[in-house]
Image 1 (cartoon, rainbow, N blue to C red):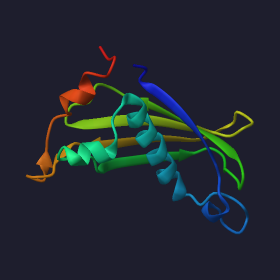
Image 2 (spheres, one colour; image 1 turned 90 degrees about the vertical axis):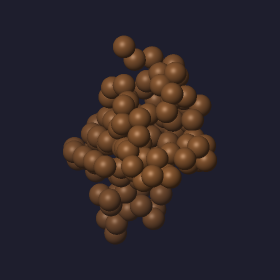
Image 3 (spheres, rainbow, N blue to C red; image 1 turned 120 degrees about the vertical axis):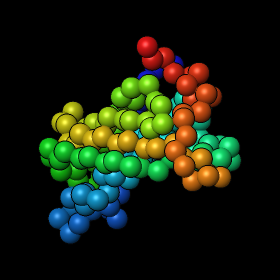
Length: 134
């Protein structure tokens, strides 16, 4: 299993301001799309994790803006697992436009939370088994 994944999305009008530029707060949603699809590509869904009693809230979010995305741009969201997950899972992201310009660099950390106890727990084995990390 490759620990990198990428998806393409098109900027919708509702995601922009009056100048046709993507509102800065929407980039967190773009990272979520990348992360959810990274997990899905691994064979895991948020829904199945929750059905198995695990929540995955964001505990840290960092964005570095380089250039604005605009209405109707085709964006590539590149998601990379930073290291082997333990109690938290960390991702690095890059968002590129169709002209191959880097727009945003991002980072998130999410904690594995046991829904019964509402306490941190270790990354489930069914995720670790699918990863190729030393």
